[in-house]
Every structure is written in C-alpha cells, then in structure tokens.
Image (tube, rainbow, N blue to C red; front, side, top):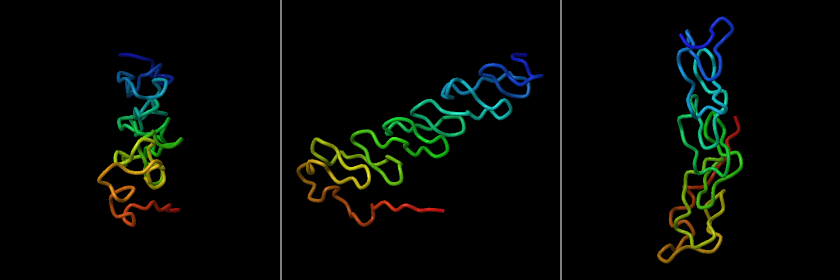
Length: 128
C-alpha cells in the first residue's frame, strides 16, 4: 500500500488506499484524495482530470470548460472565450478574437473577411 490514508493521501496520490497517482496534468501534482479530480490544471489543459487541451489559448484556461482567461493565441478567434476558429483566411496580422475579422485583409480568393455567412458566426453572450 502506498501513501498514508489515516490523514489523507500524501503527495500526488489518491484512492481508498492511496495507491493511485494523480494525473500528470494536475497543477503541482495535486488532486482530490478520494475522487482523483485535479484541484487545478497545468496551463494548456482543462477538465476534471485535465484531460482536455486548450492549446489555442494565450495562457491558462478555466478548468471547468476550457474558456481562455487571457484571450486567444495569434491566429485563432472564438465566441465567449472559446478560441476554436482559425484565422487562416487572413493575410499576415491575424484577426480580431471577438469576430474573426482580419486585421490586414483576407487572402486571395476570400472576398469576405471570413468567407462565410457572418450572421451565422456572430458571438452572443448568454447570461444565466
């Protein structure tokens, strides 16, 4: 048996007998003693076990849902902090993160800054 269960698990261990390791993507190797859910994720990951990637974020993302906390990396944009769309249709300079409009115009063959129906790709903020 690994770890010490009388006072909770030690280090990066969890489980009823402290025999399971926390995910390597858990921030500082820390997770819940019983469930194994990460108490925080390393930058670039989100989810209970930090198993999902948020590599298009320009910094950390929210553990619950992958919302980018400091905006999108250059070359990406998206609604409500989710940087899931690419700016590959733009000339150099990328695009605005809120709506994907190119900073320096679009590449040859793209007559619309995003080359798709803009009304179907607008971002809406929903407050619950």
